[in-house]
Length: 96
Image (cartoon, rainbow, N blue to C red; front, side):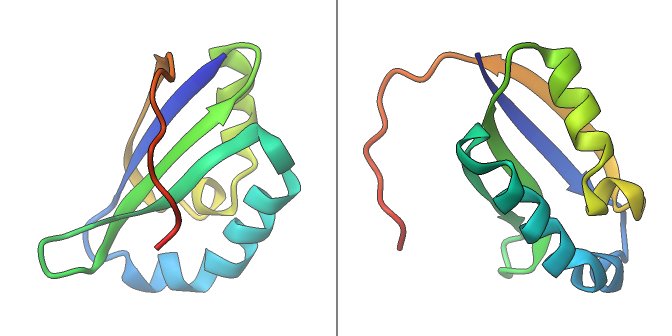
C-alpha cells in the first residue's frame, strides 16, 4: 500500500538538515523500491523546509517503524510528520 509522508522541519534547522542529509539519502537508497518518490519541500524562496516521501509498505505501522530509523528523525529535524494512505492513479512526471 502506498503512503504519503509529509514532514516539516523545525524552525532554524537548516544545519541539522544539512548535517544529516548524506545519511538520510543513504537510508532512502537502502529502502530500494519501497521509496516511490522522495524530495525536499521548499519555501517560496527555494530553501528546504521539509520532506515529502511516497512509500510502499504493508501498513502504516511499518512506515512509522521505518521512519524511526531515518537519520532526520533521529536528529529531531521534524516539527511535524503526517502519514496518509494513498492510492496512485496517474503518474505523469519525470525527474527534472
